Image (tube, rainbow, N blue to C red; front, side):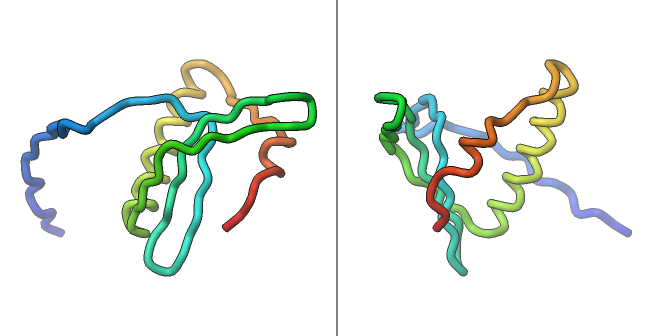
Length: 98
């Protein structure tokens, strides 16, 4: 099988590029795309959590699948280096599913 030559590419940051921290990601899916909503979550009291959304990103299904693969690869590498990432089952069960 002949593999096509990969093109060279350059990555540039636009003037509105920014980096920030998110500890909350909501995923909404429809037939055309995936919508990731990033935010910060803060516990206001024992029974109240506040999520402040600050960015929504649309991905094609193909880009969502590519993102899944690269995230899985990087999580595996992280766990090989630093140990297993444990998830709080209370957090996994909570949250809306769209």
